[in-house]
Structure formats: structure tokens, C-alpha cells
Image (cartoon, rainbow, N blue to C red; front, side):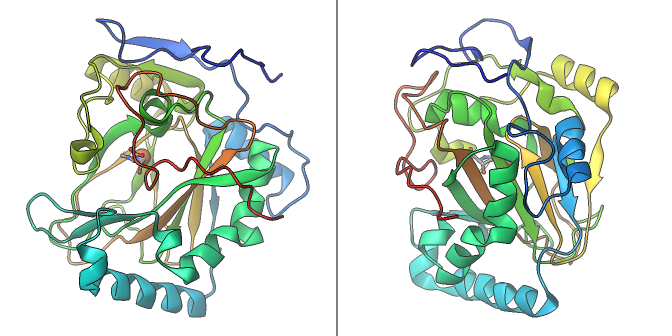
Length: 301
Ligand code: 6CS
Ligand code: FE
């Protein structure tokens, strides 16, 4: 059942109270039912509903992996890209950590994001037309690629971008082998059904810090322990070319990478056209559009 809220209704208040709380999700995970036609099978859709994520063992062909890997190398070594505000460098090594809005910098990534194998899966899960909320490359280079502490993406997108409900889904596409030891994505299966309200006001221009290392908007240890005890922790490993779709409210994170082997993934975030951004629910101002798009044109079906 899809709840229709008056604009500004906040069913997921966060960063407003002086203590954390666990809020049970009042929204679906798979919005169009488990038999919506598309690349995901009914079993895939029920797995996504249950766990908050679903894996695609072979999304890209080896030739496509090689082509996108070459594109990632080109972008990371382009001085113009490196100097761009959309590029985030690692705190210590100064290597490229992430490139945001990469679908507007690279035609190859733009085509991948709009590909039926990618956007089609998002439409199935969200039960509507979709638009791109955010894209990024996370390079996580060898010998020092920084991790991403536990967090819910939706908590940030709700508080800082004004996303009303968790009717958004990310896809992480591996372009290098994602091993347990080189900082693969970790998700608590089922945690998407609980919203962890965080403590701490959002500072102005928070993204300038949070994209390098997030503190405000990260859950307290008691809530994380409760979720980990309840759901466990899955490590999303897989070969180059594999992918994981995960719900916007999954509790997830990834460790730092001290191995010689980079963990480079392309991420795309799809939001339902029924869930477009309002004013931030808990931040002084909206984040830049290269992090949270405010152009809601659906990806052509
Ligand atoms: O704040 C954001 O939008 C980004 N931060 C993290 C840690 N994950 C989602 C997204 O890339
Ligand atoms: Fe995240």
C-alpha cells in the first residue's frame, strides 16, 4: 500500500532529536509487486523485498568490463576531471576517491545507466518511471582506498536532499574483482525495513566533509549492534561485471582497502518519478545538483 503524504510530511524524522531511534519502515520495498515484467525474475524481486538487495552475477560482458575500466582510468588521469568539484580525493593518499555525476562527464557511463539491463531493473523495483538521482565512481584504489562507515543512503538523501520516501534504489557495478579483503560492499540483509534516526544537526555545506568521511548522519553503535545482531552482515563479493542492486535504506558500509587490488565500482541511484525531491528535511540548504539531481526527466523506457 503506497501512502500518499501531503508535501512536507516527514515520516522519517532524523537529526532532530537528542537521542537515536528505530523507526519501522511504512513503505514498500518492491513497489510494483513480484511479477512486474523485466530483467529481474519474480524470485529476484522477492529476494530484494526480503533482503533489501539482489545480485546480478553477470551484468556486463568481459568486453564491456574492459571498455568501462579503460574509461575509468581515462577519467581518473584527466587533469580537468581531477580539478572538477565533482571529483573527491582520498584524505591521505590524495588519489581519486569518487567522481560524482559521472553520467554527465562520460557518454559511456550515460549509456550504461540508461541501458534496459540497469534502468529496467530499477523500474521493476520502484514500480514506476525513474530518473537519475546520483551517479558516481568509487575507485577505492589499492594500498589506501578509504572505507565508507555504516550508513543508510536514504537517511542522508531524506535529511539533506529532501527525498520524501525510500522509493529509490542503487546499483553497484563491479569493474574489478570485489573480494572480501579489498573493501567489498557490506549490507545487513533486511535492515532496509528499519529507519535509524540519527542525532546531530546537519552543518552548512556538510557534503564537503561527508563525501570524504561521513560523521553526521551515521548511526549510533547501539542501533548498529541491534541491527547487526538481528540481521547479520552479508559481504557482497563478485567478479568484474557483476552487480548488486540495493534499497536506499539498507544499512551498509565498506572497509578500507590495504590490498594491492582496487575495488572500482560504478554506482547509479534511481529515484521514482513519484518521489521527487522536496526541501531538505533536516539541513540548512539543498546539496548541489551534481550530488542530488533536481531535474526529474524520466529515463526513456
Ligand atoms: O551522501 C551521499 O549521497 C553519498 N554518500 C554515501 C556514503 N553513500 C551514498 C552516496 O554516495
Ligand atoms: Fe552509501
